[in-house]
Amino acid sequence: MYTLEELKVFVHKCRRCPLWKNRTNVVFGEGNPEADIMLIGEGPGFYEDKTGRPFVGRAGKLLDKMLESVGFKREEVYIANIVKCRPPNNRNPYEEESEKCLDFLRWQVKIIDPSIIVCLGAVSARNIIDKDFRITQSRGVWYTKGKFHVIATYHPAALLRDESKKIDAWKDLKSIREKYNEIMDKNKLKG
Ligand code: URA
Image 1 (cartoon, rainbow, N blue to C red):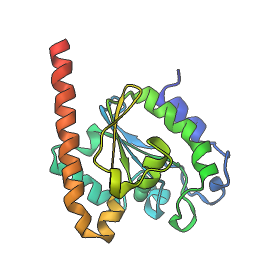
Image 2: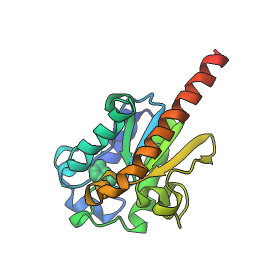
Image 3: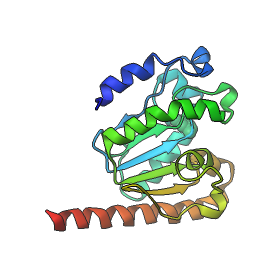
Image 4: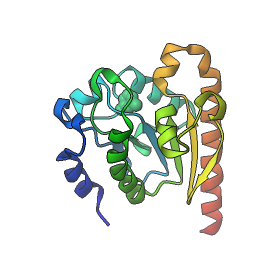
């Protein structure tokens, strides 16, 4: 079993797909290494590539507010992406790129061992829940994947483009908070 730091060293050297050629920085992911909640986006954008940190641009600022609205601090969760290098012009990652990078994400999940995984947007949900996932139809639904409770909600960038989606995103956030409380209560009972 690797540590997150060991894994990070591998990922920073990665040349498994052509996305390495245009990257300024690898965006490995960040947050609490013992987080109960892991949020998984699609891939780095312009500011993430420049800084090497996930969700620091406009969508990231909104994500911080979304988390705060249900009482989570960014520092207490872990935030990662399906692909760790920025796709040109922020296009969706190609299947081959996601597949090659998913190995790293699987290791991250194994090490962090969260109770809840939140897929941000369709690209994330298609890689984690089901390859035919439809975000408008199936967001807000809880899935069980092995020992993980998994849910998908809109990507914050989608909420910036279409504010009407915020009502449903808010429902999803409340559902995530409820599930989290439920799990924490159960864990307390177990001692
Ligand atoms: N969008 C993503 O999916 N991930 C980021 O890190 C930033 C924007």
